[in-house]
Length: 292
Image 1 (tube, rainbow, N blue to C red):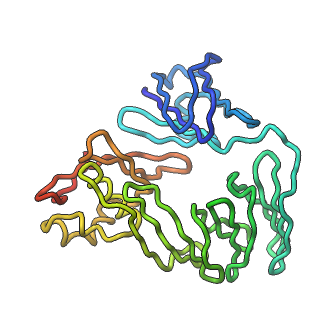
Image 2 (cartoon, one colour; image 1 turned 45 degrees about the vertical axis):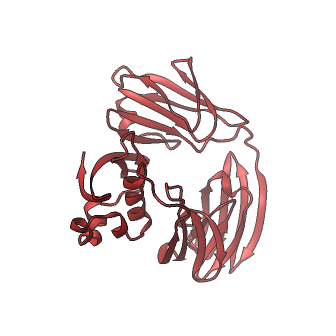
Image 3 (cartoon, rainbow, N blue to C red; image 1 turned 180 degrees about the horizontal axis):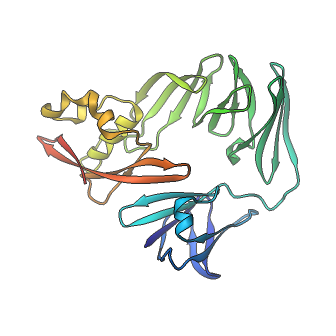
């Protein structure tokens, strides 16, 4: 099986104790057989503990919490993330009382938030981007605003929403500006009440090119934009049904062929499948979409 390795932090990758090389946002590949089983270790640089796991058939069904799997055409991609810190001591970052709730934001291996109110005591794991954060009321909920990211929490400590972006309006409706990492450089301004999106406006910073036209169509569907400008007349009347046809995909991946894209679907927690779709053009617009 062709295996692709990725890491959210620069790291060294070891296979059965042998150094394979360095990994980060760029892939490193190897040919591994899950029936044989092998020991993998991803050692991040800069004061974090390694992620260690056995690559076998069980791993491909249920990866450990620090790993996400992406099943591609002809292989699988392993993303190592959420590394624990070497320093296991507790460091308090923020303490705050708000709306009858006592909050303590701290680091102990990872960034965590403790909440205590009439619903009980709750402990929430957070990404490192919340190491410098503040907490605000959001109607009957709360927002935690970190470095270019935010989340909305219920009073019972349930994470209702976690998004990249910057909050620009606070209150019952939380309005945030979110950059979308897509080919058109979309900026989304969304309003959220609890975990539900109640408003959306989009603006693009650049126009699609011939090489990114198909990619931009699927990204627009994902972002909630109108796909009609990308479609030929024969397909434009079916624009409203496009989201239903494609299903609940979560991200879009470019392919070597600009007429093909990969769409990511969640199989289960931490496990994703990539399905491939090919477009056909007519008069410079997309006239047909077929699953590859």
